[in-house]
Amino acid sequence: MERRILDRGTLGEFRTFIARGNVMDLAVGVIIGAAFSKIVTSLVEGILMPPLGLVLGRVDFSSLFTVLDYSNGVPQSLAEAKARGIPVIAYGQFINDVIGFLIVALTVFLLIKQVNRLKRPAEIPPETPASRECPFCVSAIAVRATRCPHCTSALA
Image (cartoon, rainbow, N blue to C red):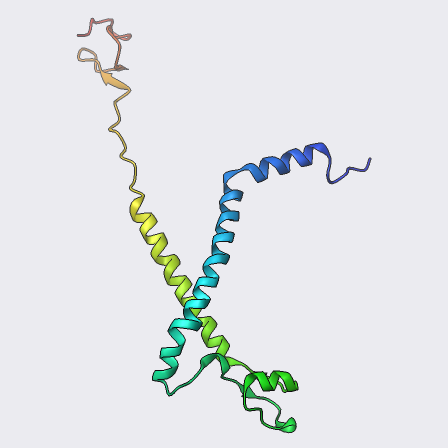
């Protein structure tokens, strides 16, 4: 007998799986992460890299490249190399991406550190003993017992 992949039981399991909190949390995290990625890219390319490039001699990191094949001439810019189909290694964009990754990693680290700081371990109440000793026969008896089941002594 052939079993269909999407029968009613499978769809019910899928609905239960999607409705669990972990999947929804993951979806929200991915969406926020995508939005945060745009902010970090803007921060790196628009705010951090221009002053760093100025300090290092007016270098625009995103346009740094190395030509692999000089047979078609030497391009003056990365855009020209791409337009002419000249093979290049665009390591400047890689530098931008590494800096962006480090910013995201630092931000996530600081966020997790703060969340962990806010999560205080729940105070564990002191355990009440489940049994006590009979003062007459030194047997273990229940805390709420009024008479010892071993020696039948009356307990206070």
